[in-house]
Amino acid sequence: MEKKEKLETEARKPLDEKLTNAERAELFGYLIDVVEDFLVERGITPEDFPNNDREGNDDESIIFGEDYDILADRFANVLGIERYVFIGEDITCQR
Image (tube, rainbow, N blue to C red; front, side):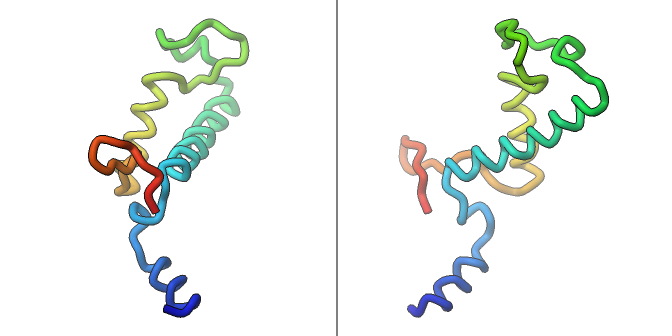
C-alpha cells in the first residue's frame, strides 16, 4: 500500500482505533486541564471543591484523584472512546 493510501485509510479509522493509551491519557489530561483552568478563572480553589484524595499540598489541582477519573470517564463516554485499550489481561499501547 502506498504511503498516501495508508494515510487515507488511517484517517478513516474511528478515533478509538487510532489512539494509544499514552495518547488517550494525554487527551483526557488536556480536557481536564481545560475544565480546571475554567474553574480557576472563575475563582474556584481546591478548598471550594472538597476531595478526600488530596494530600494537602499548596499546588494541588482542583480536579484530583477519583474526581479526575470520574470526569475522564465521562469525557470518554461523550467522545465514544475507551479510556484504555485492553488486549487479553494487559493494557497495551496498541496502534
